[in-house]
Length: 362
Image (cartoon, rainbow, N blue to C red; front, top):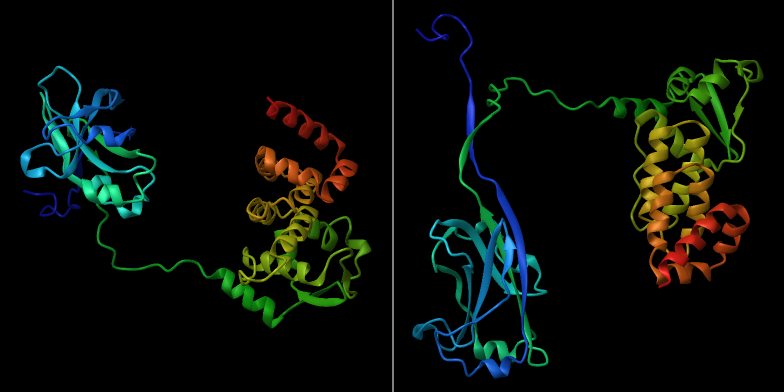
């Protein structure tokens, strides 16, 4: 009698057939191509042996086809360069070196062949000789191909998590941030007003305090006495748009959507990073760091590096140093006006840069 019939839950189990794989490629260049044209059909030239998946392989190049029916074509074959008759399973593909991968079939879609003895697998009609000689791939009597290879080990069965039972109820993702964002925009039940950059912003005292320990201290903690509950809370040294974005993040945990073509996004990220550090909004600070890592240019790297040093942004600092590890970038950046400010504001950074520069010079 099954467990289901006895009133219990049905047993569920699953397994999958898997195999370990090793992936590699070999770049094979044919120099002095014109001198290989005299090699008869069926005869080949070989690459140096190379290793993928613990096995040695050779690329075979047939300048006039690997057999009579393929004469007039260049044939490319892959062969296992081992004295063994135990089959090695592999998938392989040939394409011109430098050819975009999206112009070829995925390697995993190629047939899985057994390489044993002197078995050779590949493309007997890789390209017509006439087509090669008219193509961009033949340059200076030379062309190069790339052989991609996946070596597949023995298949085996492994246990996998049982499939989940059918779902009869779909739980939607949380939309709390949408409701809180609407609450901010509607200004319902607000009990505190902030002023920044000449503009005022109504908000909810408890929510603001819950999100920022600095705001909590100002509104409910030891600093409460200095904040009149009926007065406007002034935010000094902050632009209105920056505080508006900070307030939106406090309510929704996201930043307002901006158009990509809008200028000054990197400047806004810099100001928001300073604001986030000021009010201990760690997630917002990291978001700004991430944005700035993608805004590093010759004209901005010095300013961003000063910002990273002053506000303890280790990831952003590493990104700046990675950008400056290029001698061309470093030379161009040192000629910019921002570097003078960097040398005055952060002399320790300049010492690190000098050390890095000396390491780059051979």
